[in-house]
Image (cartoon, rainbow, N blue to C red; front, side, top):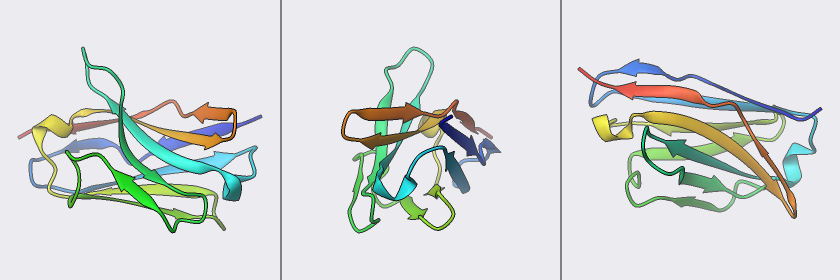
Length: 116
């Protein structure tokens, strides 16, 4: 059974930081590209960051470049999203996503709220 379990969300003040984690099980994690998406109420789900299976290649949405960093530890089957200088517009449910060829899996999401 494939599981992607996100954690690390919460309430943070503007300018603060959070580190999200996504622990994977039931897949050969090291062959999967991993992505972070987010969805705010009334908005479509959007890609935030992508990391290749080796971790050597990363891509970021323009809105988070320079503030967010995606990384992975294939030995721990975990992908991370370090979020710094958070803004109220970063408030959303954050999901991790695993992709390999036609296989695609989603986690249940973790809520991030940026508010004073």
